Image 1 (cartoon, rainbow, N blue to C red):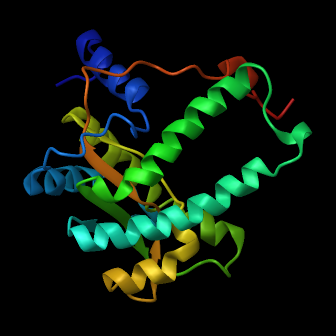
Image 2 (cartoon, rainbow, N blue to C red; image 1 turned 120 degrees about the horizontal axis):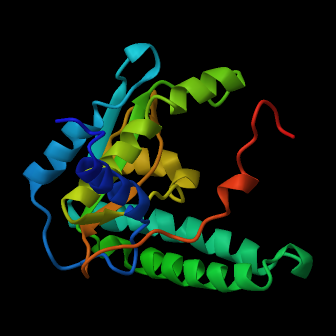
Length: 221
């Protein structure tokens, strides 16, 4: 199959431009088949990793009590984050259209924090090793070896009618999450993906900053 064919490009471009962070549209009642999760992770592990190390792991949590434990940690961190946002000086808060967008995003985030324990599958992408005290290039290489696979996982899920959201708010309590799930001390948790079938038909490309404002040819200026 030639992916450069117009029909194939249209499918790929649609997938890439409509894979959203899904929160309010997650179906909290429909179960997710184990084999679909396994197949999507198999696809995700085709992503590149530093020196082809493939030191990734995916902790898939379906047990209700453990999902509730993760959700409690997430909610605790989320409440701290939200209080910080609310207490920010007025000049640091978004205004105009940005404020409208932020209110919509905040409403969606609050919903997820309140209902995370109901989402049928939680996936924590992990990588072997710890780099928080290492030089920046080591940290970049480390996270660069798990984040592409995580994004590929989200795309594979989306292609099969499943929604997810890239979240990191449980990480202030990474040690507690590790204890809950038996994750070894030498393993780094990179994110937490709540996964469920999504409700509704499709998603649309989101409003983004014009690319002319973020592309820098041959230097920053």
